[in-house]
Image 1 (cartoon, helix red, strand yellow):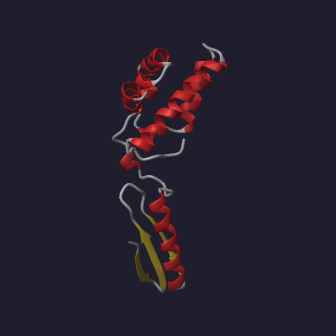
Image 2 (spheres, helix red, strand yellow; image 1 turned 180 degrees about the vertical axis):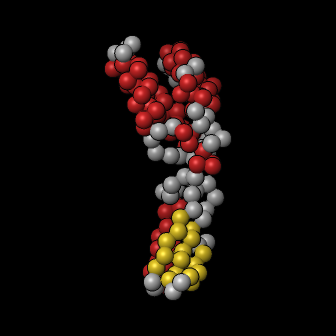
Length: 148
């Protein structure tokens, strides 16, 4: 439920949902404030609001990879290859980062460093596994999804 209050001649709206960062905005008309509140509440119901960093800091990238290795990868035909890749990835400094600290820049730095040792196809394969692990975590394990 959104909170609307009159403050300094304007209507301030706050939308708060568990697991999402709170958002607020001010309007001159109460009707505009109510419309914006309904719109953002529906976005929250669909999971389209930005995720709060507080809900992401309890998950590490390595923890997601470990659970993915133990629960999802074992059911695949390419299990042996994926386990090898995932075990190597879990030893990286990248794996110790919490999900709120993962950014495109961290993956880009990893990619550039990795391309000096292996071919681009290998890096693409690794990134495919990483992406699938994060997607499974978001859709099946109730880990808040976020954009990288």
